Image (cartoon, rainbow, N blue to C red; front, side, top):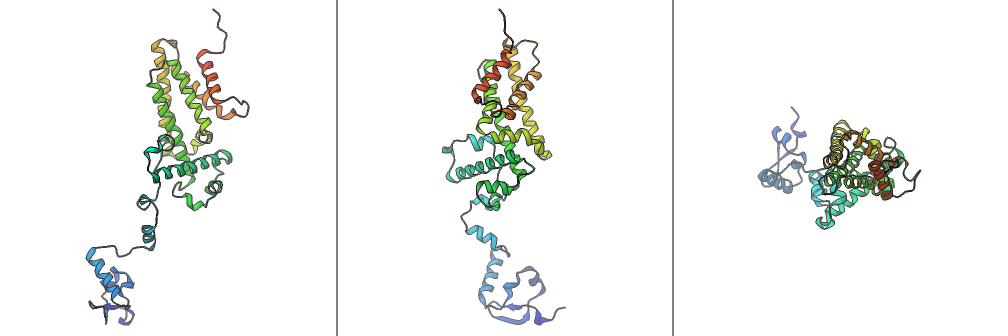
Length: 294
């Protein structure tokens, strides 16, 4: 057993100290500084903690966060919430309070910078530091929004495919003729390339680098998008706009292949605007390229 002179002194109820050492149980359950001989303040704090059941070890970092101006939800969770395409790009600003709107604006800026770095440097070569340098900030300031570049890639792909599924459902359920639905779908698909080219390219080129869980979830959304496109072709067959013998699977894959390949050559081999390009692709798909004789 340790010598009594090396054990901390016991604090009495009146704040004075005793030469009798504190018991071993107290030593293991209470912070050492509470048993110092610096006076009644420590004893009072100990009694208060015992009475209220408060935590015995409040970290300095926790106290600083509590006194800071950080959002309340930051103290509750360290990881940022996943944000879909609707949240970032489509939600009206009038429906957001100041802090939420500011968060989404900043989150969009960071994701856009990440997508641009992935597109220009390649996903494997790009780093969090490259993203921070592009934004003119320190890398540490990004970790609340994107804890890693893997998380950034996940969010970029989630935003991209979320938009595809959403607008394909809207087009499929609209009252337009099937041919006009196809034209509308192509225009919306390619508008992503014009509005957010880096998101489009990263989604097309780097979704294979996603982790298994996320890649399977993204794959399920892609298949849902393909089913919505195929459903439009089937609607056209039932309405008599498309021939009965049309293979809807082949038609769907041809449409998506034509649209997705635009990212490779647009603005490199053709300066055509996206609206004009959408019209040309729809005309070739719906009408063909052969001259029709009466």
